[in-house]
Length: 284
Picture (cartoon, helix red, strand yellow):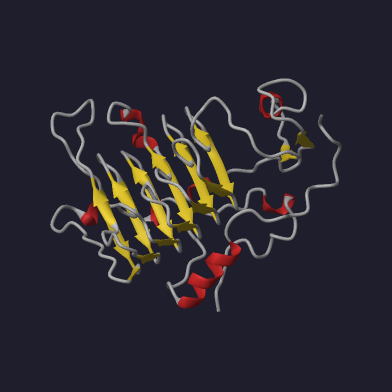
């Protein structure tokens, strides 16, 4: 029997506030705040997303429209110095650059139950080797489905990422990449290969404040590799130096990877209709 996270609060959007697992567990969203409706795709002005984000009080921001692209080329771009963020149940595909980029000292973030497809550079965490401040980055990614996306599930520089109970299949280059000084703890995930078999990749880069180039580290615990997927873990290079999630948070909802988990992640990831908070005034 699959034990999914957030089952006790999914019937009410407001009940989700403050319930994130992992590094983003202190994200409380609008909690006791009013609802703000995004009613147009304008860059600014009443009813725009920017107008809602400009408000200093907590808000529930609800989109009444869809479509359009902003000036940035990433689907979701988190920077700079952003903290306590939870991205949950989003369906993301076919954007100009990344689907989610987390860079420039943004940290304490959870990405959960999202569906990613029809894309190349899926998720970048850590900007480039010159941004050494990204050593502070900490991200949890769990119960997501990466469905045929080509690479970066994620690609990480400098920071720490905990991956658990995700399903990544049919990647085009690699599944997960550890670059300069990064640490990835991959736990009870499903990696199902297509034509490309290498699940884990390591890119060597030189941090701007160091003389020696380094790759990152990946520790795999309880993962399963299907259809010829190959972990290709580095040996003798400090796997024991990878952080353990229990150093940062006490509990998370996880089970051994299985056929049932594989099936449920194909059904329960991505956008879902949830009753919006109706007990407060509208903020527009």
